[in-house]
Image (cartoon, helix red, strand yellow):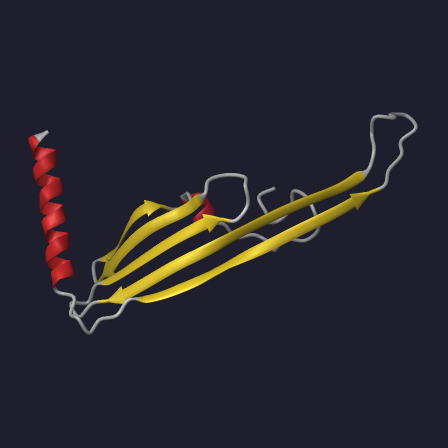
Length: 137
């Protein structure tokens, strides 16, 4: 327990020291963005063999609002923040929220992000309505 506490205290002190080296001339750049996708489909089908099979209208949507910020410090560190809010009622309210610290050492990402398989995914664009492409439906 003491070892964990000392480790986290040392990490917090290192972060405070690095943050203390940011000059007043450095400015945080902030951006707001997002997207909205809507799908509507209509099927008119009659099947005499199975009267339970019918057509109908389906509607799907996916929307998000992004808030992003970035600060480049004089010491070579770059601090980035990202918060993504879901615009529809399904799923989580906050999709992703993270702080990224990057420098010559690489980058450290703290917070929530898509799983590695989703980040490395390559696929076709959405076409049509239903379970296709990257829509996640």
